[in-house]
Length: 94
Image 1 (cartoon, rainbow, N blue to C red):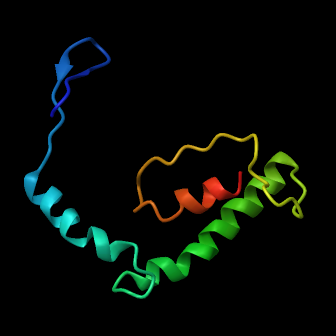
Image 2 (image 1 turned 90 degrees about the horizontal axis):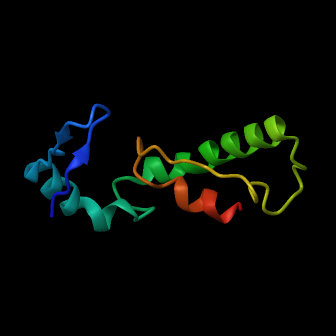
């Protein structure tokens, strides 16, 4: 199902969906979440990214670093530039 998106000037735009890209990412979906699979480097780097985001948010918002759920009450936006490996652990932080 393709839904029409209204542009900023009201002109309808239809999103482009590349079937080859859909197939490519569908074929690696199960493997993507395997921390011991071929995407292991991304999984191993994830704690570093999470620590950076957490510590930066704590400093910026004056959050106690010892708080179990330091992001509680904040709203985060995952803009989709990665593979989703950060958004789930971030949600667990509040």
